[in-house]
Length: 470
Ligand code: BGP
Image (cartoon, rainbow, N blue to C red):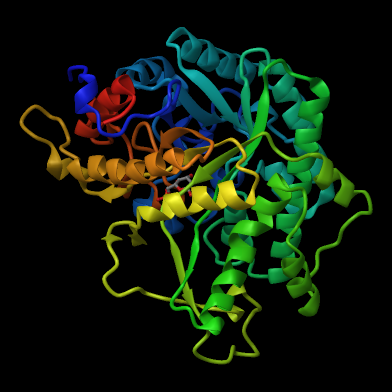
């Protein structure tokens, strides 16, 4: 695609804007039993219950990035990346979570970083993306404070090994998701349904985060920044009725502010603490925690946005026998006329991305941030291949463009947003949905030895990045 002239660009982004994508170790690496990697909860759960995964496809091969990273990074360049977020697999680097460092893993991540830098793609590295080492889960996962210490050691090892070349670090990706999936709603291992344990897991995740930030700051890594990646699903009330507004406020406290406030401001929202106290669900804490959280706020916030959360006041009294759930305080609301992505079952509401950014500007000190994930998963994309073998994913181009218009508006209004990373570079393994929905700029053909082909959106993204706008 040709460079456009200035006049043809309607939405120009600030110089140096980060264009790229995000992914995670378990979702692309494969080689689950190779290279000395220890099992994580996904390997284990799949072995126990393969039926829980779409078409019975597990994490052992995924998109084979472990073996094909050179080809993939060259393709990243071809689709316009100047930055790329991936995660280190804790159980690959330290197979049992606490012991010896696996040198094959060190070499692998070193090589990936080198390859990215050769292509002028800045590596953004995340330390934890839903993938608890099995050995750590066996002693209680985030419920156990010893696992927090093991994680902090792991983080320190990563900073030491790669901190000379990686300057953007993230402690967690969407830390609320393992809480929801593993301890409330049964879509991650260990499939517990227990609000009190969920609260403890969430709390220890923040302690692990704050301690990793503290370690990072003590190490004084030159030009290094550390942050967290949060899925900041905005909560919209059905109406202005006070009961609806309160319902939305509580949903916001549970799902957004439980991580956003401590990470950015260093304090939990008082009304969240009160709510938990009132219902007897405060976590077990230690005295010095408050100060630790207070002192170790982030430099950079990653924002993942896919869909809004619409809520209304509860229609019925909760069943007193049912497990205590966040939904004790609100019901979900289906807005008439909403636009849907039918494959993923998620509403598409582009303005949500702007509302999040304005909230960050107004209530979170306009902290430096970027869109760290946004994207559209579509089933059966093979049917859109044209005679040249290119998947014509115009819906994805439209999805990105319509969200970017709102990001652009937020920038014009002074939000400190530095980049846009799509979910994701190439089709990858979506946890229990496996390869059902495809998100990539690059297709991975499972029928043809995982052959990679750039989709129409990939060419479009390249032009977007080269023109720094559209
Ligand atoms: C985010 C996760 C990713 C990714 C994405 C798409 O929540 O950070 O890991 O998978 O969502 O969602 P899904 O794969 O469930 O369709």
